[in-house]
Image (cartoon, rainbow, N blue to C red; front, side, top):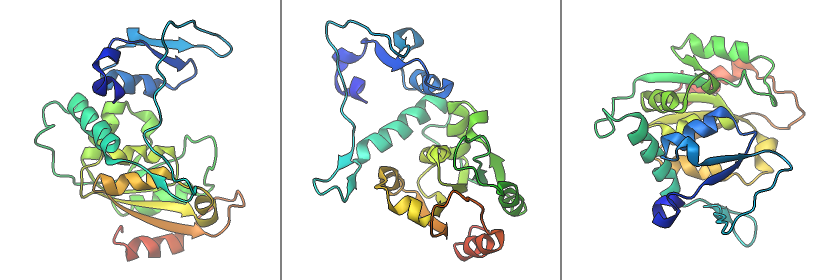
Length: 228
């Protein structure tokens, strides 16, 4: 976004850590940063620059540290830019969303839900496709999201896929209440900005590192909010 705002930065190399995931570099390419402009800097290595531009974060905490502000412009910019890059043929005439998707955390390395197979069985019987974003390229994720009308997922970074959905989509996020309430989470502000209905279902009170979900109670909650 800064490269769009400041044209003189367009050809400036981008320095990243060498350990970033492949999907991050796919994202750079999709938003118009070619591979040859990306410098992957290994840990404990240094680079000498005549000029170094360090972008500020496009969001922030209030002075009282009790509220997180996220402006609408970057949320729309990212969705719009990737839509154009990944969906050239229908960027202006989007498909009618018909899919129902459960976004899995099976490949996660932390906060793994012990009985996610039971959750998958529940939502699968209601017509939900099971999607693990790590199995798809950035553009494939964008296309899946644009075709989806309802999402269900546990809290986690895999829910970034929802950001590419069209306005009017619905997202039910499963959370531990205490775990989420002790953090000021900026990403919660993004979904309303994008016109995505965001429903949070707290499946237990305390974060005791037991992430097992009562599937019976979950079914009742999902039916209550018209996700089943």
